[in-house]
Length: 124
Image 1: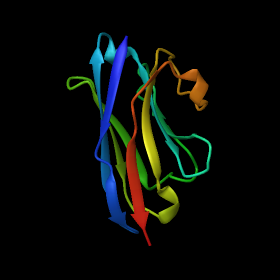
Image 2: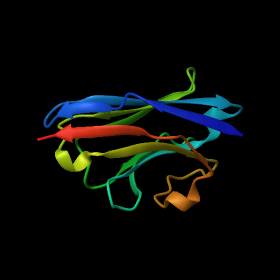
Image 3: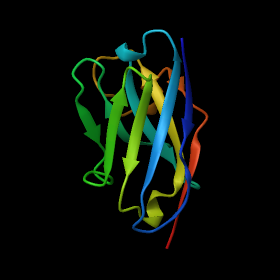
Image 4: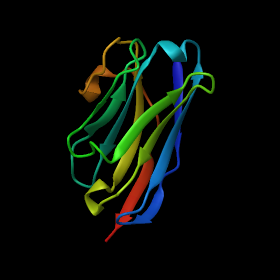
C-alpha cells in the first residue's frame, strides 16, 4: 500500500510558476505509475500528467503541454509537477495518484491510491 501527500500549492499570479510535490510512503514506489489530476470548482476531476514507472515516459493533457513538467525521484520517493506560465483556468485542487499499471492511465478511476490534494489558485 502507498500513502501520498501533496504539497506546494498556493496563490500565484497569472504567468507565474509553482512546483507541486507528492511524497510517497510504503513499499515499491519505484514500480508505480504516477499521475497528477485536478478538479476545478464545479468541474469533474481531470487528468493533467502521468509518468510510467516502467519506461519513464511522460504524458500530458493538451491544456498543460509545454507549460507543465512531470518528474520523479525514486530515491526520495517523490514526484514533482513543475507548473510554468500559469493561467487562471489552472485554478483547481491538484491530486497525486498512483497505480501499479505499466502505462500512463488518464482515467481517474484507474488509479488505486490518492493523496488529499493541494489547492492551486491563479489570479488574473
